[in-house]
Picture 1 (cartoon, rainbow, N blue to C red):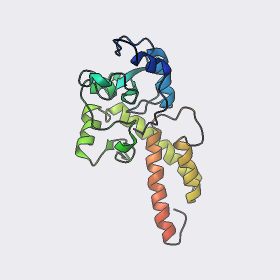
Picture 2: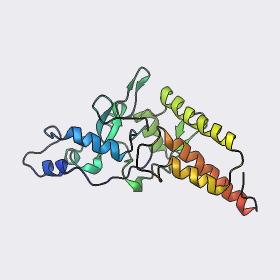
Picture 3: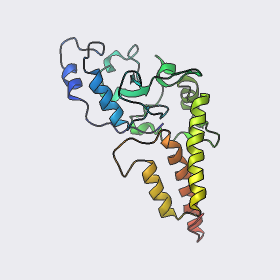
Picture 4: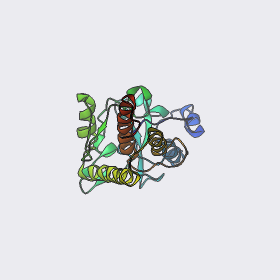
Length: 219
């Protein structure tokens, strides 16, 4: 999971919200909203970071605060996210697993620190040291479903292979790799599960800084 930078909301949503008897069910601009959200999230599910497209077969418009419990927020753009469908032979994940259960943190709220408080383990599992958030990740969203664990492990393995081919890396090289993994240098879609690589690059950079303090700028 990564922090989503929300931009201006679609004009159609603003206009609909100002109309009489407006609600999410009678909002006719959902196709355009899907495109807007997927582009804003750079082609990734708001929860598991798998690839999504801007169509109803690939993604669903997610309400971080469920409509059933927070009806006043059903047209609030900061409450709207793009989630994968969340159905597989190995069970439900993401929005499909979450249903009407609220979760503690919104990926579109920078102050919720979803980037910082998730650890990506070497075996592909994810974990948070915050018990409530860890419950949301593993039980409510089911983000340790086997196929997601395998996909994250594959992303990490590919990254480690790249490091092995590159050899000892200067901290500036690591920073450049981090910018690419994080999409800082371009505006297009990100690689699925890219936050796994971001997390491990940040760990490598931290180690490189420690070594630099001891007079060695390589690891």
